[in-house]
Length: 115
Length: 112
Image (cartoon, rainbow over all chains, first blue to last red; front, side, top):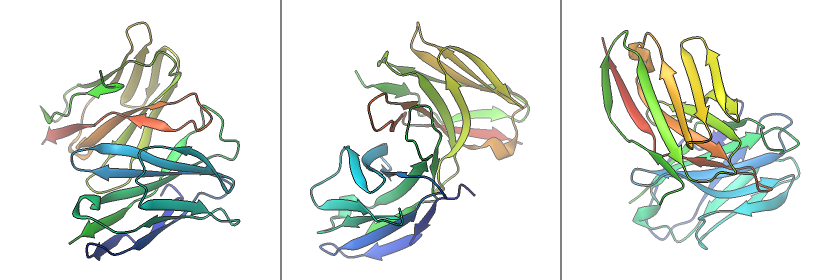
């Protein structure tokens, strides 16, 4: 158990809908990362938050957004869903300082299927 | 040229074999190198973590980094069926995010 908690584990929804994925980082970790893993793309970095503020953006679509709350949990919002958004979405967290060399721990993922 | 190259496999070996997994990378700024193991539909689990060049050993696992060749390896000795998984190399960026850039993963199957 990495200590990173993600909900829901599985989600099936229709095209055009909106879903919210939730992540609780490890105790004491200030940095949260979101990654998308689809069959043909591998693990792709989406976005990072550090202590409530956006730190870096990767290949995140405009239909997707995220935020990190004062209690440090994070949510990834996916809207106007398309079939191609079906993937595993992982949250990861790292130790408080966010410095280089810190270990990044992953949750078990949220498996989204868009039908 | 992709930033990270990793052979997707699958790699099939008999139980007890020595397994060699490799990645090449193009960004000479990378200083921290990781190997993650991922079982099907599960979260990646950190296996090995290496700073700069050299070797690091942990039980049956050895990680090697050759920065001059931009090449990293993971060796698994006495492989077991429970080692069957996808192995992902990962590189930590040196910008303010310190995010990980992943290889595409190598599927390993260890046959009993």
